[in-house]
Length: 257
Image (cartoon, rainbow, N blue to C red; front, side):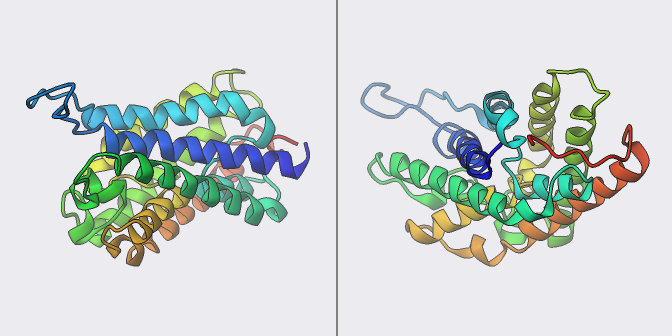
């Protein structure tokens, strides 16, 4: 498969993840229906469970749509984890990550344009401050930096173990996107109150930049290091563990050759 085609697939896959997942948090999580068509406070928000499901559905749908082209990473941490497991060539890491970050940022731009269609919209009033990630004062539940680092590290580690196991050559064929999508849903159900859930550096960067560029508070960008470091370290460890202790064989298997 040509690299250019893989990068286009990663771009659109990550774009859909941010638009669907972060978009649901910003536009639908606490929607109260106070516009002209729905006068009064009639609660219609999808809440934490709905946002969690939205993230899982984005990965599930795009894994089926373009996973056969690029491997369906949509996440720099996933790319690093697959590389550590000998499932992905190191020479493609940088272009994959760039494509993922660009797709994620476009998703944030679209969310911002739509959100600003409501008069008086304020980024600080949206769920998680434009669905950005943070610790301490920027954590939805006020969790400490250590707690946030631990949850991001551990959940990304488990996410990669699930991805690697579900895509192992001995795993049931055709079901990997379902397992991966449900895993991401569960991850969000656990950790939205802690960090607003990252486990994906591109998703974190897109929302932090969205706040910075579109009039919100820029504090999330100062904490972005954690949401790159913790997921990538967790993914690297998972790749090493799976390759050495769980893989059905030790051959190099690149996703979407």
